[in-house]
Image (cartoon, rainbow, N blue to C red; front, side, top):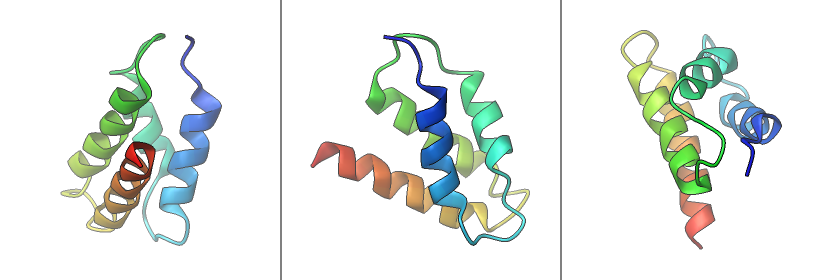
Length: 78
């Protein structure tokens, strides 16, 4: 199954809505370095959370983006 970059963009965009100094493209670009066609939705979701977490040192508002991405990941499980 091909990687759905549009879906990733939507998820990250929703997670970053209303957050100052948080770059959607920074999360997406970094996550895409670790993703590939055929990756599971779970692995993709986990990669987005981890990527946002690595950016927290640069900008603390990434904490909120990471939390929102984690919430989206939890919704997949339900």
